[in-house]
Image (tube, rainbow over all chains, first blue to last red; front, side):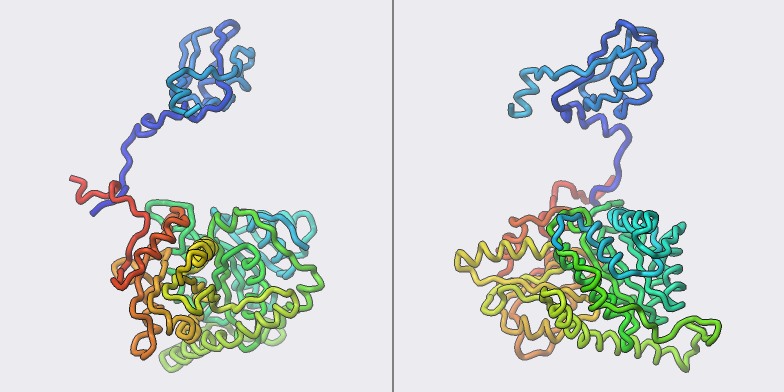
Length: 95
Length: 393
């Protein structure tokens, strides 16, 4: 008999950590972005992508709303904004 | 004075009051906060002690072995893999009859790696010759350290003592704790006066090679001294009670067992949960009770016999396994009653709370429910069968 023993790569994708967000989420303004890539490097979920200035965006399915990207952005081009609960997610949270 | 303290902070505070001359430890979750705080106290000049940073638990244990051999009071702490890494030295400390006092934050053993609480680490080392005391709450952890120093350093003992506190539940839990004053501690625990020590003026050798002509007697003496500790521990707890006002038996604690028909035997923090369930069931007229084992080594067989001889059904909760055999504590409880005329009709064995799985009030109620005339062998509580599979092919 075997118990929980082996984890296969990529299993963390199954866990949509975006559901952990409370109250705030980052908003990528895409106005003064210089493509320094700092937000990509600091994101603990690795869920920010972009190619060139004013193209960066995160995947809200995984963004935990930690705010590190907004804090490190040298151009203040990422803002933490109040979470607008979508009806489906609001339902999932029981609110 | 009563303070609202994290368990680890409470241990650090009581160790400070015990004034060890040398402290050495290697950090490991969930023990880290204890030695981190002690290192801070030394660095800030609040504790006149030498804190030695080492590269491993093997070195930490070796260092306190060497230090205590020179006649100074010592302290160390560890957990889980760190305790196993110390194991070789722990047998040496006991064999050399040196009173090292150590806190172990009880934690699961790899693999799979798991940092949460069970008793597999400490219970696996039950045969290393150390006295092993298990605490239920943070106050008891604090008080057992004072008793541990008195016991270990007693001239008739010279034994190392391990105070076991459940990882996270007690190390990181916060409770109201009565930390005694320095005067009270000094009154109960004077400075360490070693029976023998390494001293250039009076040279001697500790732990030499012993051939077959001598080895058995060294082990026999250690075994006898462990048994003598069974007599000394209650004397020390009685003296403790006079100074500090809190009463412990030190070996076992009986909770509502007098007329009980079903009694759970357990160790550590889960006893608090069990007591709460017992109060609820007693209120409904169910005759249930708890026997808490404080001293796993020495094993208080006679006290356990007296406590359980008239109880019809006994359930032993182990938070560790002896893989492929009976659960460790249950085997010893059964051994107490082998060949006795008066004994429980059923002694069932339950496994719960491995790797930090919560033992809830419902878990305890389930154990009482399963405690019938049918004897159960290593019955796992709160197991998830859906995570098991017969093969990986």
